[in-house]
Image (cartoon, rainbow, N blue to C red; front, top):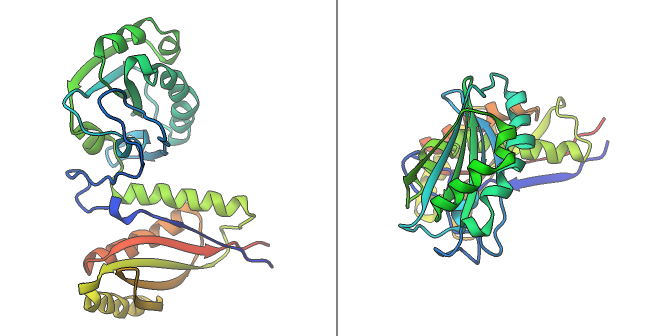
Length: 286
C-alpha cells in the first residue's frame, strides 16, 4: 500500500470568530484595482460553494475583495429571480456553477461596465445574483437586454445599493469560519481522491494550530487538553514567529467525518485563543 503526503494550508487569518461583522480579508494580490475597474491584472478568482445556516445555497468568489480597494464609487447590484428556487443542494450546485455563473460572469465582468460578478444564492423560492459595479446604468442596460439572463429565469428585479465597504458581500454572502473550513475540507478530499485515496479508510490526520509567541502557555494548555481527547501531540514549538501546535488523530476523510473533527479542533483552538491553520494526511489506497 503506497502513501503519498498531501496537505493544504487553510488561511487562519480569514477565520475570525466574528466573521459576519469584521473585515477579515487580507490583500493577497500584488496588483489591487483602483476605481478604474473591478477586476485588475493578476487577479485570481477562488469560487466556493456552501449551504448557509439559513438554508441558502451560495456560490461565491471568496477572493475578489482581496483584489479590490474599497471605494465610495462601488455599488452592489442585486438581481432577483422569483420562482427560480431549488431545495436540493446537489441540484443547486449544478445550476449555480454550470448555468448561472457562465451566463452572468461574461456580462458583469465586461470591462466597459466596470463591474464584477461576485456571488449567487438560491433558496426554495428564488435565485439572487450579486455584482459590484462602478457603472450602474451601463450594467443595468446590459443586463436587461442580455439573452444570457433570459435563460436563467423570468420575473427579474434589479436593485442597487451603495456599499463601499462591501458589507453585503461580507455579512450576507461570505461563509462563516465553519463553512469556510468545510469548503477547504472538500478541496483537500478532492485532491486526495485524485491521487487514489479511499476516504472510508482510517487516516492519521494531523492538525496545525498557531499562537502568538507570548501565548506559549496557552499552547501548552491546549496540547494537554488535546491529550485528554485522545489526540497524539506531535509538536509544540516556536516556528517562524509563532508557537505551532501539531496533534494527530485517526479519522476517515469523507466530508462528514473530517468536518466533525475539524469543528472539534477549531472549537478547541478557540477555547485557548489559538488559530486553526490546516490539516494534512497521507493518501490511503487499497
